[in-house]
Amino acid sequence: MKEILLTREQIHNICIDIADKLSERLKDEEQIPVFVGVMKGGLNFMMDLVKEVKIPIITDFVQISSYDGTSSTGIIKLKKDLTYPAKNKTVVLIDDVVDTGYSMHYLKHFIYDKYQPKNILIVTLVDKISIRKVNIDIDYYGLQLKENKFLLGYGLDYKELNRNIPYVYVPDQDEIKQLDEIAKRN
Ligand code: IMP
Ligand code: MG
Image (cartoon, rainbow, N blue to C red):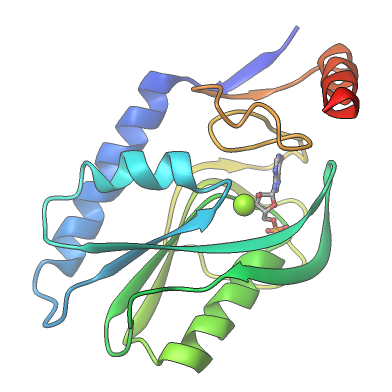
C-alpha cells in the first residue's frame, strides 16, 4: 500500500502560503526578483507556486543532475545555466526536495559566484532533514520530513518515471519493481 504524503489540496495550500510570504517579503525590491525552478524535479512545484505570487517576477530555470536511482551521488553536474542576468536581484531557488543538501549547496555557490545576485532564497516542497550532509539554510519549505523515505510524484521520480503523478507519495517495493520493468523496456 502506498502512503500519500502530500495530497493535491495540501500542495495547493502550501503554494498559496509560501507565495504569500514571498510576495510580502519581496514586494519592495528595487529590482525584479527571479524565481528559478530546478529541473526537472522542481518544475511542478515551481510552476504552481509562481501562479500564486502577487508581485511582478521573472521566471528562469537551471538543470542539474545528481541522483542515481534512489540515492544522491553527491556529484553535481550543471546541465542548464540561467538565461536571465541575476546580478543585484533576489534569486528564489525552487526545488522539489532537499535531501543531502549537495544540490542546493552547489547551486547557491554557483549562482553567487557567477552572477552576484543580491540574495538567494531557498524554497523546497519537502525538507528531508535526516540525511543532510551539508549545512544549507532553507528559507521556506512545505513539509519537513524526519524519516529517510524515498518519495515519488509531483516532480519526484524513480528512473525518470512518475514525475507526472499529481501528489507526493511513498512507493512500496512492488511499485519499484514495476517501475524497474518499465525503465528496462524504454
Ligand atoms: P540532494 O542534492 O541530496 O539534496 O538531492 C536533491 C535532489 O535529489 C532533489 O532535487 C531530487 O531531484 C532528488 N531527490 C532527493 N530525494 C528524493 C526522493 O525521495 N525521491 C526522488 N528524488 C529525490
Ligand atoms: Mg531535483
